[in-house]
Length: 586
Image (cartoon, rainbow, N blue to C red; front, side, top):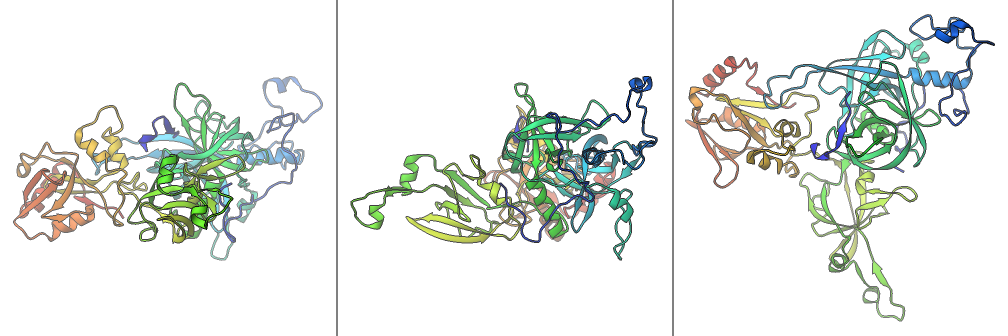
C-alpha cells in the first residue's frame, strides 16, 4: 500500500509444511559436495587447455556453437566437474520475463491506459502435483496482456500463461507449455524435456550473516547478473504490492529494477528467497528485500491444496500493546501471588505478558469467542510479549502475525487468554481476511455501474492512489474516503460504493460537479455493494430514484428520473464509447 512511504516494488524459524505437504527437490541435481572456492560462492570455470593462444585473449577458443551454450569440444559436458555442472544448471534455470501491461484506468474504469512493457526475472521450480513452472513476482506480470520468458543463452522467447498470483506475497507461477509440455492423461509427454531441465531446489531459511547470491536480469544490461550479499535481518515487513505484512528477509546485495522475481541462493545453490523490492531513500544504500523460502513454500502449498491461491491467514482482531506498567496493573496482570494462592512467607510477584484485544472484526473466526478487553497471553503454547512479538529463533523475535500467517485456512489456534482476572483457554479457526477497501482486484478490471451518467465504482487502494490520496495535497472528499481504508468488513461481499464522476447530460444538469463521494442509500435502502446497487436500480418501480451520500446526517441528496434512466444511460454510453454500462466483480 502507498502508506509504505519509501519502500517501493521493483518492476522492472517459520512453520514447516504439514505432513504430506510439499517437498521440493531438483528435477536432476548433479552430485556435489562443495560449492565454495577461494572464499567465493561461485567458482570460476577452469580453462580447458594447457596454454592460452592469441585467440583466447580476444574470443573464447571454445565458444558455444549454438544458443544452448554447448561447447563444440565438449558437447556432453564430460570435461566439467560436478561443481561446474551444478553452477551451469543453476544459472540456466534463471529466466528473463518479458511482460506487456494493459493497466486499467481506475478513474475511468471502462478504459485502459496506454500499454507499457517491462522486464524482470524468474526461475524454474518443480512443484509436486503441478509440474515444472516458472516463479516470478506478481507485480512483474500484473495486468499482463502478453507474458514471455527467455532462457539464458537462448534467442527465442516463449509464451507464458499466468497460472496463479498471490498479490499479498508478491509471487506468481507461470506455465510455459513450449518449454515444459504438460503430461498427457497417461502420464506421458514431455519426459525428455523434463529430465533435461534443472529445477532449482528450495532451501531452509538462512541464519543472519549468511552469504547469499541474487541472480537475475537487472537494468544495465541483457545478460544474467550475479550480486553477492549477506542476510541482514528477518522480520515482518509491509509488501508494497498489496500492503500485507509478512515475513521478509533483508539483504545488503543490490536489488535493482529487473531483479524482481529472481532467485536468491545460498552456498548450496538452494533458493532461500525471491527478490521483490528495495528501499528507495537517499540516505539508505544496499537495502534489498526478499520473499523468504518459508513464504514461498506457503504460497506453493496454497496453490497445490486449493488449485489456486487463497491467501494468508489472520486472527481478525485489533490489539493494543501492554508495554506500560500502569496499564498492566489496571488489567491485574501484575500482582502478589499470595493474593491469589493464599498467604505465605514466600511472596512472589506474578507477571504475565500479552496484548489487549480492542476489537474483533465481524468476519473473523474469533467472533463470539474473543471479547474486547481480553488479554492474549499465548498462542499454541508460544508466549506473547507486551510488544506483540513472539520468539522466532535464538535471539530473534517477530510479530505475532509471523506465526499466524504460516497457518492455512481452517487451521485451529489455541489461545491462552486473561479475562476478568482469570486465565482461560479458547480455540477458533483462522482464515484469510478480506478488506472492505481492497488493495487490488486480482488482475480483473475495476467494477462500475453507470446510471443516467452517474459513474459508481468500488473504492479501492488503486482508486485512491490515482486520486493522489497519499500525496501532499488532496480534497476533503478524498480525505474522507481515505479514512475508510482500515474499516472492518461487516459482511462478505460488502463494498464502499463511490460516485467517481458524472458524465454530463441534460437529464443530470446541476449534478455534473459531483465526484469522490460515498453513496450510502438508494431509495432509503442501505447500499452494500455495486452488485446490490445494480439490483436496487433494476428492481425500482418508483417514479424517482434518490441517492443519499455521506456524511450520514446532512449529506448530499440526488434525485433522478427512473423512467428515462435506461434511455439516458444508453445515450451516454454511446457518446463516450462505453461498451457496457455495468461491469461487476466475479
